[in-house]
Amino acid sequence: MSETKLPQGWDEAKLRRVLAHYEGQTEEDALIEDEAGLQSSETVMTVPHELVAEVRELIAKRQR
Image 1 (cartoon, rainbow, N blue to C red):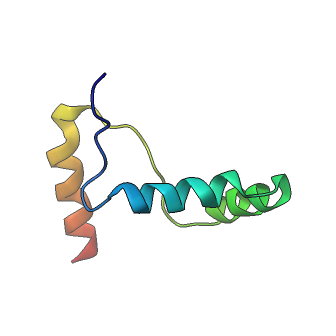
Image 2 (cartoon, rainbow, N blue to C red):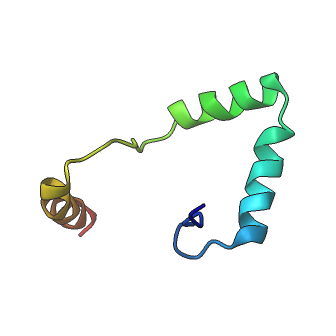
Image 3 (tube, rainbow, N blue to C red):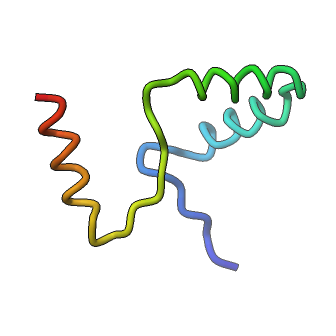
């Protein structure tokens, strides 16, 4: 069996804390969290690998 790769800066303890948070949420708490995310001014999306550099450049220009 292969070892699970964690995001940079994560360790097993952090993974367990995040899992405990979401597994312990009530449906109402999860809904509140989801709705709060919809109020955010940011969007998460999939970007083709070949466009990542261009997207990063656009974001950097906007932040300047």
